[in-house]
Length: 622
Ligand code: SF4
Image (cartoon, rainbow, N blue to C red):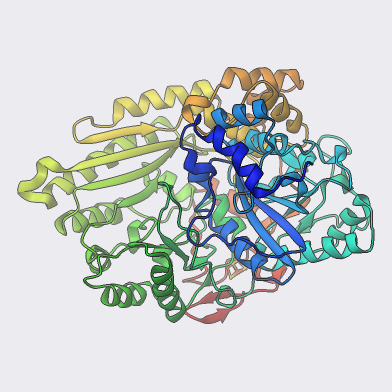
């Protein structure tokens, strides 16, 4: 890799920036960026999408903070250049560089890439190629950076396994330091890449794909020592021990989630049976109110933002949320700073909370997720809200001043019939009528947005054994839905079923899918999550060239005794529990939330040796 001074690199880059869209994506020195660290060991942290999508990613912000706080280590950031910039870089032979030092990524010790969702997989290959790092781990030498993955999609790592030297399963606060220290130590001892990988495989939570052989479809992976047969996720015991990255980077351009974000709790034990995040991030660990308030105030002071978001999978479940919001709104009175929550649970919604949130001047968006149209199907998926809860929440919100509500639903759920889809229409009609009644004379301004996605059966959930409904059937059900949902006052939108099919194929596939992903990238697939870039025909051809069929993989069903493609990865929740939950789903039997009720036996607390942390107190599994 040619060593180029930052000034020379900038000169070459500057000419290119004049010819591409949104050049601010590629410039450094944002407020809060950490530059000029003298780290002997350098890690590049990558988000596999554009700057404006990835900049706010909290997991990478945590790793950036942890590594840059460690003596002898430095972390810098990198995002995927949009297609125009990538073309210019290839033309001008500019290798992908880090934002902080404009240094070629191939010269770093480690390249860490998060895997936030399946539709970013081709972007990972694009990133590696622009970095001039071989796509496949097997082709890399001691001169290449160690390529380490992580994030939600690592829970079924197989479709991306050949492209990574190692993947971290679970939370990174502690594990990232274990990885970089082990790597540095092994290199200082002059160990070769294969030996480095063997050492990494002994770190709890680290999966080294090259040490696992696929014996045959349906057989367990053959783990070669010292790799363990099963890699169990890492999780921190107490979130409060890790200060969140409060003084984050403030971008020059508009990005998604452009505000201070403080993670107030991790994990969710509501037990929605379709939800992978709810299973893999267990157990619930709350940050205490005093810490949250202090961190929010610090974050606002050092970034200058006028909005703060209290983030988590289910923020309204935080046992001290009302206290937190009350204290924050009191301290922020007359400052113009608003406090937002990512989403509100139907049953946790209170007008008092809503009024507190509105104290910043504007009403926060009201987003509710009943997910299914009938009580029977909500019991199947364990979404423990009733139609009365929903109507009541909407009535109170619209009486308090709201005029818009967004409702999320899914179609293609297990056991779904047309009656359940028609039920979505009836529920929407009920919500619209309650909202109009509560809005009184202002009823004409009421709008209900209905967003419908297609169910994808994900790994490590009670529905992991089930296949996705066929594309034709999903398209038919979408028509049933269109006919059922009222038009006036309602904005109906849905996720493209083609995209969900591909998502399912990549979420449920094994290592064989890697060839299809590589073929799709070689045919030009990039930024597949961007509607204008998605091309199912290209993908079908890519699967066919690898001897595969995307629909067959998406629709494939497994039996209880079958070895799942992700069976060697454990999130701590036992497969027996997931199967029991599947059986309860079939009989439409709800399971309570262990944060509010007794332990329901998912086993994660025991498997990881950690407890629920609620209201500052630890509560182990009974
Ligand atoms: S082991 Fe019990 S207490 Fe812990 S998360 Fe699972 S159900 Fe909840």
